[in-house]
Length: 448
Image (tube, rainbow, N blue to C red):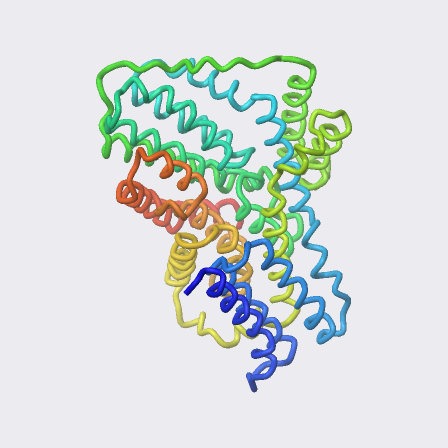
């Protein structure tokens, strides 16, 4: 079957889920049936990617405004609001900071400074590259970070000779570190933002920028060390020294210094929100206003940011609001026998579900589908489970299709599917085990 025909049939089937759910004599009220149909529509389209992921967000909003709001006798405003909520403003500011850092080569300059202190031992160079990648991914797109760092890796690994096994460690360590690094801040990857918004919707003001870092950083740092050790075991480093000076040059002009200053001010305000009372989204408007008003970024730069990701996140937040207002969450609580499962069994179910889905579909779409369900489980605190799901879907990196950084590294031709799958499966397994053991203990200690 031709792809266009196949996608058309999938789209038709997905759209048909809504009237079908409304027509079937299901044991639920009309708004709940509509909410069920919209959820099934999102599930099918996000899993199959029959249409662009962000277009599914528009479909969700359309059916919520056209059918769900009238059935509930309310305005459609609650479903529109998520598309420019505080978390969307936060992500927008993060994307603009990343765009400015890339435009003025500040990211490359930072990477060079780190590498200059790494020495020439291959194992140390690998660790320095991974830590640099992880740090950059905390603040900018992990896809852009991977693309930039692999350019540096190409210059470093080249002297090792074609086909040298240790080159594979670089081309696996960079994308995996980018995936992990994005887990450490709310702006690092969309699942974090989705979880943070969901937590604050249920417990207003309970999840701040700094608290997210406290929740995630210890787990991620441990995973980075485990990943480094795993790669050294799989691909033992050579005894010869390697060059670590790519030789990037940065022009420290007025615009560059302004970007550096705004980055530090914004990060400081994000980390001290409990002192000044400004929400992370409000703080994120500062770089947007300064960069765009002073010409540091122009309209072409503004167009280049990942608007599709913003609308995808907005659609997920709207879906979550719809599930709550339609009564679907309450119906699931009453229908699914959660009480018969132990907290550990429930945790395993959510971790496995998240890991399996994100192996084959976008981790943002996976988070959009699963995180709203984490707050209907009586046996486990919703914030703790939401954080767990967000981190699991970001740390599952088995196949090239699992994350964009994986796809970039695989496209280099240096690593095979089997090599990526082996290393990716092991670090994903380590991550899941850490979430269930150390993570659960740590989050409880932090009051989640």
